[in-house]
Length: 511
Image (cartoon, rainbow, N blue to C red; front, side):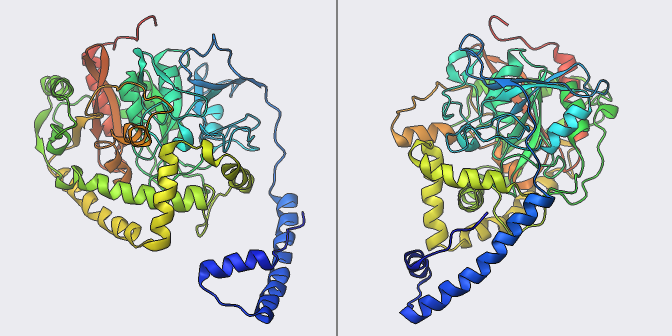
């Protein structure tokens, strides 16, 4: 395909942006050089088409009817059968709609990507199918996954199955709701600030954010490379453990991965908690202006149940967890998402590994065509990030990244005295859905005001399991179990012990 050549007007804009003063003769020279260079772009296009590009498979899919989608959680339905045998044989899985399923449309919650059809399955999808799972559809997620609430998707609000007027949590909102409604056995979610754990907490299911890089992100639409995670969601701990064993491990394509160790979560799942030391993370409780006493009390009661099973319980501390970590996340997520997800059309540049040039081209064009339809939370990031990158030159992103090792050290110091740390997943119960036309400040604050306990572990990469710990005024409350990096099996083992002692968690009304 021929590449359109720049003209003088294009280079005048580029020169102005770089602060260059070019004479007419200089302009002509640079345009001539560009013409030569862009010839290589055309050569690469031909080579890619011949050696890398894949035809898009034909897979049947359909949009759900209104009657099939009362909670707004389905984006598209499919029936893609996996292998005849395997650890997930006979199990149904829904895939968060920021994850590619070949031949099936995706939107990533946004008009800027709506209608794109991937040509290749994401690594996690390939592994689920190889393990025998049946992929039954794509679940609605929030607009470009930048919301912890469930009202920002271009398809409309995803409703909490416990109370249709409330948020289900985001950004893996549809995944959590479909699992809670038992319309699917399990789901894939993504997590950059809590987006597996938050909807799991508010919807009353189990969700596990794996250790950073344990599960390949290949084929999922990125936000910010250093905080991108993908992982399992299910109605019970065992299903999460089985899923994690299936999807974990290096794929040789994801630049986030540096030979992660093998995991076998199911093998140790039933070993109990006798002799384990559990640290209640002080800074995760009683957060001023945020924590609800009933939430803290239910989580402490759940830990007391673990203590009755033979665990030792004490108080742990990581001073930067409260406040400081969220400031760090705000800078990294704002600058990082503006640079990679928006300016870099998801993938950015400058790293080895997997790229999807088709989705980059599609999104790059469509996000400008549908710019005004982007959620206010995405536009807030775009505007602030653009300003920061242009005027602060990425220096504050660099400062925040350079502070992450100290945050990590504080948690790791706590792990010298405790096997796991426990805290509320969400400091408060599910909030009321915000109207799409709400004032911008209200809209953005209510989309992002619940990250205090979850986002820090996206920065440090520690594995974290969210499990229901009770009901407060008829709404789910969850505790989060955090383990040292690559000890995902330990977090799930503690969750399993609690789940067994607790018994079956109630189902939403009518389920």
